[in-house]
Amino acid sequence: MRQKEYHAVVVGAGPNGLAAAITLAQAGQRVLVIEARDKVGGAASSAELTLPGFIHDLGSAVHPFGVGSSFFQALPLERYGLRWVQPPTPVAHPFDNGDAALLERSIRATGATLGRDAAAYWRLMAPLVRGWPRIAPTVINPLSFPRHPFAVARFGIYALLSIRLLAQTLFREEPARGLLAGLGAHSFLTMEAPFSAASGLVLGVLGHVVGWPSPRGGAQAIADALARYLIDLGGTIITDQRIEHWDDLPVASAALFDTTPRQLLDIAGDRLPDSYRRKLQRFRQGPGIFKVDYALDGSIPWAAPACARAGTVHIGGTLDEIAVSERAPHRGQFVERPYVLLAQPTLFDDSRAPRGKHIVWAYCHVPRGSREDMTARIDAQIERFAPGFRERIIARSTMDSAAMEAYNANLIGGDISGGLPNWRQLVTRPVVSLNPYATPAAGIYLCSSSTPPGPGVHGMCGYHAARAVLRDLRANKLEQSR
Image 1: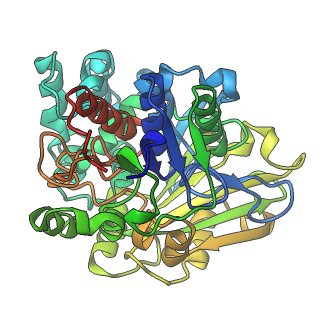
Image 2: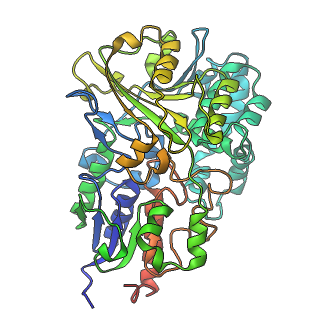
Image 3: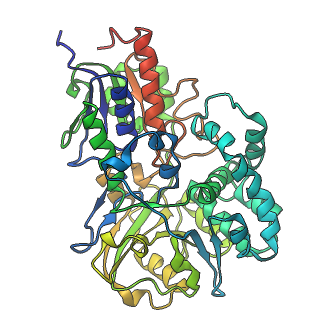
């Protein structure tokens, strides 16, 4: 039998894989991380996609979950180069009349853009923002009993609802309804789906509590900081090495997979019980995305000037229009006016483009695996709220859903959420289990966004998985796992 060089091996160097490795290394474990690509980061990476000197984010771009992550906050990541850039306004949501609803850091300032719904917005958000320190532990540790059940229950009553029901019940006018719909559409669920309000509320609260920043220099800065800290802890990272079968792994007590269930089945399916394999095969992926990265010779000429203060702009118009757009991918359909998520980081971070130039990151939701070219429709949606936008484009880079998966195998069919976060799979992902990170096979764990608390660059999935490994090591459950 080969001697074990490592206590644990982690497959995948995305934020969750690196978080798992760091947690194990902090506990004195010898850890190896193996990454298929030539650099760490996974869906949190950056590159010159359009022109030299224009640094675009290949996956995630704006990180309210990252700056709000209790795991990241506990690490000395600033020492390793991570700097958060906070735009004055987290989110803008423009309308056809030239106005925009704004998610400001202040609840009252947000309400000032919502007309007659200012008071209703205050009644919704103020208790959640005040209670966030008591609510957050349950959101990021969803399998634990809440220490503050009344605060969590208030949040849960709203979170269980659909975005449409919540918006139409609380608000009378389109600015507030549209703003809430734009937040909720991050979930990839339809506006009518139960639990679609959960994502919108969390993102809204985070906007008030911690903002929606981007890392200076791009998302790669998050992964690079995590990797440098891991190496200083004694961890080892190998890149450009793809794991296709269990026998490709070095001998270790535990193997953690920062992958989807499908990839776990491909690599280690023959080591898993039939019943568990069948459960993983039933795990549902969400819709895909079509992404466009722009190089511009000037900033976006928004009709609503306040949009230039926002790091993120939700382009979709009214609640009803967004509802039509978000319903279509679930039906295998496309719309002419898709809901577009747009980030404009160079308004606040001049390190990512030549002087006077800008980058823009934008995507819309499409049916999973789609090869449909949505470039013209995304261009038109931006132009609709920023006349003259097209004239400022000097280069584009596009990725359809198939290209997203080719770039990162975790993004199956362009699904960037690690699986559809609907009511069945929001907490009980990838299967119903009190310990969703451990598989029935000793020594095999999932640590990706396909486990709780789900999508977002926060590292919590990896942290929780590593804690499960450490508990099993202490209980001597892994001695014979390899």
